Structure formats: C-alpha cells, structure tokens
Length: 158
Length: 158
Image 1: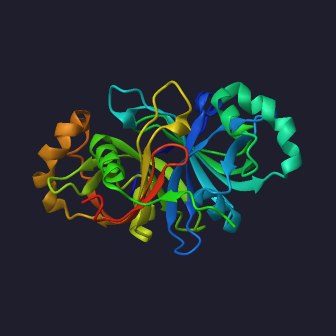
Image 2 (image 1 turned 60 degrees about the vertical axis):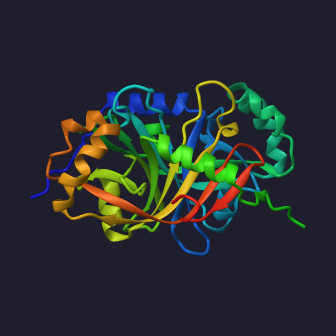
C-alpha cells in the first residue's frame, strides 16, 4: 500500500505559500506545445496585482505566448533555493492556472504596480508586443521540503 | 510581417548552453497531468552522467514521477538568475526531452557520479522509492537574455 506524502493543509502551509507568491519576481512557466502537445518550460516575469492575483508581462514574440494563445492551461513554479544546501530541501510552490490575456487598454492601470516590483521592465513595458496576462488559479501544490507536501486551492492563495 | 526573434545557432550559443547544462544542480520540470493533460511544473535534481547525458533522481512518491510514468514527454528549465537585475536578462536553457526510467540495477553505477555533484542526496539516494531517470533530448531552446534566442538540437548539447 502506497503511503501518501501529502499532509493536511494548515495555516502554516498557507502562510508559506503566500510568502513564496509575494516574494517571487519570476517563475518557470509550463505550457503545452501547440504542435506536439508536449510540455515546454521557460522563464517569465511574475507579479501580483492589487488584488493579489498572479500576473505576468509577456511578448507576443515569445514561444510561451503563442502556446498560451493556443491553449491557456499552464503551470508556474515559484521559489528559488539558496546557493548552498540541497535545492530540494527548500520550499517551492506550483501554481496550476489558466492564462487570461488582458486587453491593451488595461496596461496603463497595471503599469505602475508592475514597475514597483519590476523596475527594470521600464525598458520594454511600453513596447506594443508586451502585454499583461493574468493567471486564474485552478489548484496549487506546496513542497515545503522533503516530506512536507500540501495540495492547495485557489482560496488558500486568495 | 512578424520578425522572428530566433538567431542562427553559433558556437558561442552552444558553449553558453553547455555551460548552463554543466553548472545546473536542479531544474524546473514540466510534465503532463495524467488526468487533465495540462502542464505541471515542479523542481527536480539535475545532473549529467559520465556521457554528459542529463539525469535526475526522483521518488515514486512524487507527482512528477507518476506523470512521467504515464507520459514521458517533459521539459526542463536550467539556469538561475542572480539576485540583482532583471531575471529575464540572464541566460536560461529549455531542454525538451523524453524521460527514460533506468532499472534499479543501474543505481550502483550512477550513484558515485551523482553524489559528487549532489552530496546531500546521500540522505535518500538509497531509499528504494528513489530511482534514476535519464533524459533523451528532443530539442532545446536557449534564451541568452532579451533578443538572444536560439533553437538547439540534441547534437548541439552532446
């Protein structure tokens, strides 16, 4: 009989997940390749909007943008390990989501908040190929280090 | 007319990709969810074997292991940005691959090499739920920073 490594979600797990989400400035995003159906992982910017909803700024020239336009199902990995120690002993958060492309007229509203956490993005934020995409969370998984795994809901991260 | 951001692959791009691969100790892995077909990204250990073939050590208790047993198509993101600067200005490598589970009797051969780069794994490498998985590269994509994208083949990384 297999032993499940998933622990019951408690407030400490929720707080750890929310902390990872608040601190993250970038994420590894997994998308579905439009031709093969295989997963493809790349790096994107990560931010929270004023309502704490995950957000990114991506270019239509990027492969991940084209993939998301074809299939909005995606997954984000947040939380970087320090340089020392076993990278798998440190907490990370998987957010499974559906990407929602925001219309260009929302850019002015989101611009200042995004630049607060991503000041270097001022170099390209106004390029017309860059657009904001919001992530609607479907589920999440927290790995707090070996043997400390939790399944989370969108409500846990709200 | 869309301008392709992909540059012709040259020796400098190959060297940068090989360096990222040699230096990586962990990766973000994208797998396909067995029930939904959506991508799911999590963290795994990353190493190269004696023939420079990418390798990981994963537990059958992990979600990614179950997903790979169901569908071996996967994608790895390597290369961590430093703490300062725009995380998107630093190089990272996407390796698209097929996972091949190695039989338990190969563990003794791979053990010493893996522990050389992942010494902390001695805490769990001998647990029977941990097994080595080799990645057979199908394609790769190098992002050397804004506007410096390259498509690579398995041969480029050999």
